[in-house]
Picture 1 (tube, helix red, strand yellow):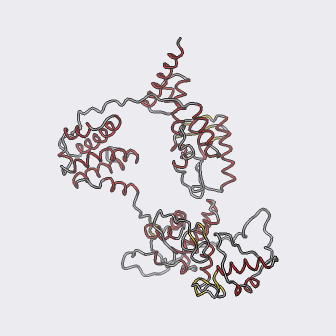
Picture 2: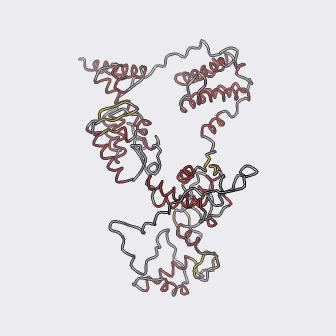
Picture 3: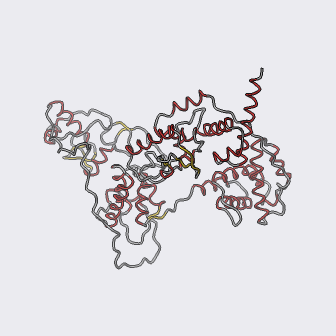
Length: 529
């Protein structure tokens, strides 16, 4: 099967075997791919092409013969009827992928009432970790294995490790609600990676990721089974390491090493400092990078940077950009001074200044109405209520668990703070729970799930949560700010009240109180004659 690079999306194309046009991965459509797995390639008697053949005819000739037999006789067709017309095929009618389906010559057996599709396959027999017995200890370390050279058709289906893996996969599928397609893909991927496996080997992420993706198999679910077996090692490079190497490119060696140490202390923490959030680390390094690139053309170490160099870099900046870069530079040189990397802090006695925030403005009713009209699913309505009624952030909404909902006592816990459930949120919450129960059979304990997270135990992404309101004037963040501003205007601009109700920081609560006070004063001035 053809292999494509990561992130590649194959355009609409025609199948190399049946010439059908449609969207599919690889060279053949799904039906021809399954046909090729059970039939060998040979020259077709009808069209003279070298293709997988059955009774010396390719699948395209079979489709044309079936179409001709169907038009000539209205009774149910069998394989004998179609074979009798294979020799009469003189042309081929092109079609789209999925238009040809084989019809049964006899009625299918009765299925249980209310069930669709093929009868469910029996579960795999119970299996446990194979007994290694006596074995020769390896003389050398495990040699990296190239799975791209392995043909899926040569998979060892009799391996005891595969039997154990299938049994564990069945248990995980029952617990997490994996569908039929996921189960088939997981069993196929396990047969692929466990072929030739022996006791003591380790299956590494970097070795199986590209081959499994080229076969359109779910790497995450297969890795879950391998981790359950205890034979998987995640040796993939974290995204933070790739980002750090990209951001430090172009710096002088001395400045690069010191900036890297400072960034790692921010990210991982130190003896006297707590680790910062990854977003904060990104902002700090991105803030100092332009200045470090400029200094790398003249200097080799941070100790050569003077106070005039810092002031020169700051002169070209104004407002928030100057504030952010100066804060990041003060952090960098303060850390370097404490660790003895510079003799003197060039950013000392350079005042950052108090950042003047603009007055927060409330949303107009038309903006809120458009946001409400955009929420068309039970999930988006509940997300909208959490932001607009309870002033919850996007990350806090995604982190909600089922245990955070107490319907009997009408309580909702958001970020550790217990809030009463109003009638609107309670109705939307019950609608979502009913939709979740009927839509998925899942072991995910997060309140909000989707098609990707229902089969796993992780939370939904911030991108998915905020997707419905993206492009609206009233985004989830604007709705959260509007709710807190409304509380300050209705109950008075009291920072203590805002901090108690929403759990805000003292400076943030004072900012909302100042904005509410300014808005109330403007309203009072307009009301005067």
